[in-house]
Length: 254
Ligand SMILES: C[S@@+](CC[C@H](N)C(=O)[O-])C[C@H]1O[C@@H](n2cnc3c(N)ncnc32)[C@H](O)[C@@H]1O
Image (tube, protein in one colour):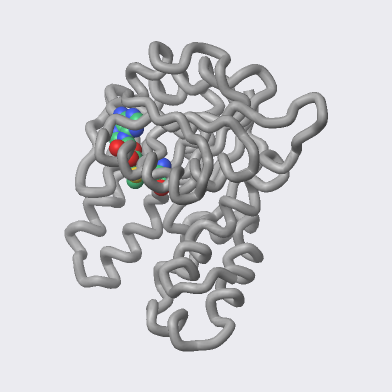
């Protein structure tokens, strides 16, 4: 378990995603000594730098120059090479080209794009046949409960509206709202992924408990972080916990 308090919290938030990606990213052979990994909306490189450290060729495409500068610093600190390219999902095919990635990470981005269905169709063109999409997105029901528990009942009520997820009743994309943008149910995400031409392999519940636990408990109680990671891992593949999860993670193949 990592040393600092923030590293331990980060580990609790992302441990299940890393565990799911492990078999894909560790599957290297003499014939194929590294994978082409694209992290779309990879931001400051929290995932990308670690993936590059495993020996893969990693490209981050992100619209934010500040994020790309921070990515560059982080990569240099960890002594790994990550290619940063400015762009977004709407221009992705011009930036990286079709069939260019073995693995695409799309984490925390579908919430803010103009049209999730179009974004996923673009990703389906970028992932090589047989390649993998790792999709992480905010889950709606947990947000409703969190708003209600904080006493924000109107916000909770507004979040209940499924039309806010991806389309309005006439199937036009609804613009993302609020700081974190759209939220999805696991069924909505799976349907979007399948409609884009992917096959869904695995669905995971992410951060079922982590956001409910006081940070001070993780900081002060010896072994609490490791036990929390173990608990998150234990419920991640149980469908009954998907509606309680802050995020949903999908692994899909092309
Ligand atoms: C919540 S952050 C997620 C960062 C990173 N993927 C992670 O999981 O830590 C969202 C990122 O998406 C980027 N972004 C925003 N709109 C985008 C778009 N239309 N296409 C691609 N990336 C976008 C932002 O600049 C930001 O870096």
